[in-house]
Length: 176
Ligand code: SF4
Ligand code: SF4
Image (spheres, rainbow, N blue to C red):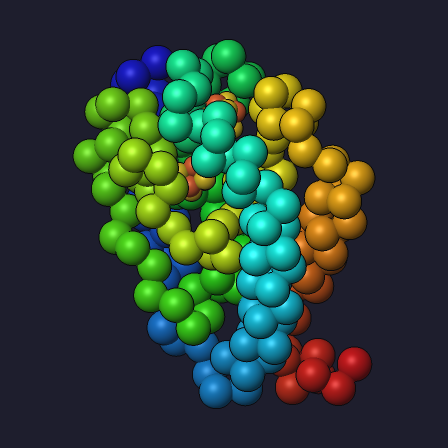
């Protein structure tokens, strides 16, 4: 498993570096389209975090499982294939006006996400869609999942709307 995680982590790293190059090469129009969606995505995540954070602060620091691992069989999770679980759309939405912390790729040797350092080092409104969708059973029991589901649906709809194709044809998208 360690060998597979190392290989997948290396591919994930290359993909993440490609995402950064794509962001840096966006044109003015494309960044403008991205910006309006990014504001909305981050606003939604911030509202969600307000609901979630008290339970996270209470449970996660003392949790024996600690789910931000590349391979977490206890929660049926394997996330070595994408840095911070980002795909291109959610990456661009969070990267838009924010310089993200450097991923700690050496974490792979300890079976940890590259954005983990005694907690997630990404800003609370700069998480990937898979990361904000995951709730362990303990958190599910404590949180108002109905309220969270509304925010989640909205975040998903923004990510689905903001595809790379839409971005590259942003002049058309801005008027649609
Ligand atoms: S989300 Fe749940 S499983 Fe993950 S660290 Fe927190 S309490 Fe533990
Ligand atoms: S990006 Fe943050 S929340 Fe997501 S798995 Fe990594 S450390 Fe956990």
